[in-house]
Image (tube, rainbow, N blue to C red; front, top):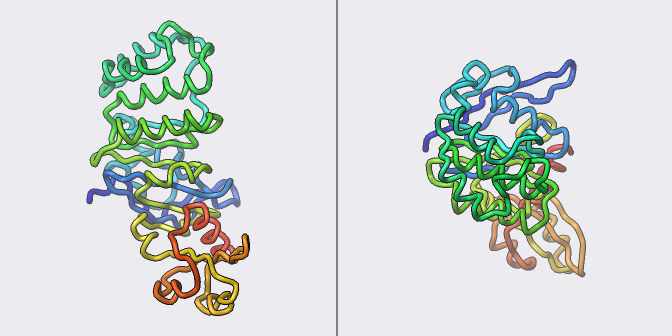
Length: 285
C-alpha cells in the first residue's frame, strides 16, 4: 500500500499552547479516513499543516511533497471542502466553472456540468442566490471534476438537512472514491459516515489516541449488553467504559476473550461514537 500522507513527530505551537504534539500517522491510497476529535483537539491545525497553510515542526509528507514548501505542486492533486464554502457570493455559477477550468489543469468541465445537471443548481444563478445545500452541491461538483488524489473534508455537511447529508456522502462514495483516491474527513456526525470509513484517527489535546483500521476495531473492541447478574464478573475484564440503561449495563472492552464476554450478555461491535467517548475518557484519566 502506497502512503499518501506520512507524519512523524508532527508538532505545532501557538505561543505556549501546543496544538499538535508529536503526532505520528500514515494514510494509504484508496482509504476513507475519519479524523475525529473534540473541539480544540488539533484537527483544524492538522488539516492546515496537510494543506500547506501553516508551518510545522517534525516531518510531514503529502503525496511525496512538503506541503508548506511545495504547496503549489501539492494543490494540483489535493482538493478541500470546508464547512463554509468560500465561493464568491457575487459570481455566477457559469463564471465560476469558467474560472476553475482556466486555472486548474486537472479540471474536467464535462463531469462538473453532468453533476450540476442532476442538481437544483442553475448555471445562470449567482452564488448568493443559492441555498446552503445548493452551494454544497456546487462545491462538490467543482471538486469531483478535479482529478485529485486526496480529498480533504472539514465538517463538509454542517448545517445541511439529513437528506442532503446522505446524498453528499453517497455521491462521494459512488462517483468519486476509488482505490487510487483517498478521502480524509473530519466531522462530529460520525454516526452518518462510520459505514463508509476504512480507518479511524482519534485526536485529543494535540495527540493521536487511536490509529486503527475499521477491521482492527472489529477485531479488538467488543461492546456487551451485560445482564445484571453478570456485572461484577464483567468488571473483572476491565472495561474501557460502562453505562446503564434499559435494565442492562453497556460495557466496552478491548482485547477481552470473546468466549468469556458471550457468557455475560449480548455481544456486538461498538459504534464509532461509543468507541470515541471511551478512548477519549481513557486517555484523559
